[in-house]
Image (cartoon, one colour):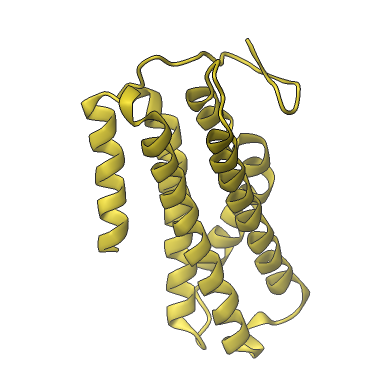
Length: 178
């Protein structure tokens, strides 16, 4: 186990990667796909305004938002830190990781605001406001995913196998096309 020097917390099963393989990125890429699917749901709801989404769609969206708020706080960034931190940590590494954490916190805060908007009153009474909230949320989610992938390429580029690099480049290419 390694200790996170800034927070003195134990990161289980962390190792200092010399080479990052495609398999090492699977959990991160799955989390990104999940977050991007949530962003797509938010975009679909925003595009459908002022109409209400179907009840099953709305229920699934709210459950996914709640999962982002509750599970995301525990999972965000640990795998990335374990891959990127090395014995010679430099300020750029910490700065980029701090930015990743900040973007994750912003996504969770936006998700909490959306949950509150849907819980407290009829959010569809003001479709312009709801549309703005939804668009801010899905734009933020997409930017956070892109930034995390760019951070990984920037800080571990020389340690990525060609397959791992291709996986990240393909993901970034898809985000540009979307």
